[in-house]
Image (cartoon, rainbow, N blue to C red):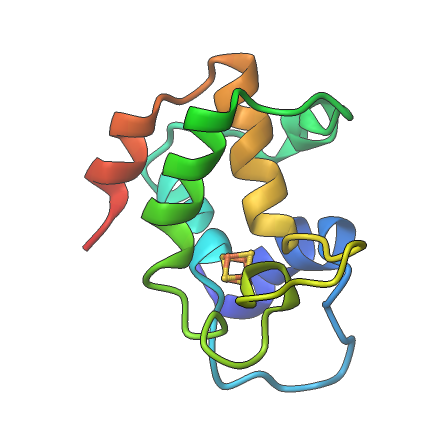
Length: 119
Ligand code: SF4
């Protein structure tokens, strides 16, 4: 699956930081793991819109999600306000992390699925 293809169903509709027409050299870890799960046939992108609800994850799950996904993300060090040492109050995660949170909340995936999808 090409980068352009999954940008259309992950980044463009769900990520506040997506810039149409700007060629990013790096790919955020959240989007990468989602793309792997789709490629494995475990997720259907057509159903992603039903996942975004404004319900927080349990703190332990949220912390584990961030540790598993963000720790290996190339944007974490400098470009991601959400994961900055002192994040602004209104900092939001990328669309990939939002979607993965929705998948965990809905029970479509478990944390172990993310562990398995890692390199
Ligand atoms: S929230 Fe930030 S560090 Fe975490 S996956 Fe998204 S872009 Fe990367």
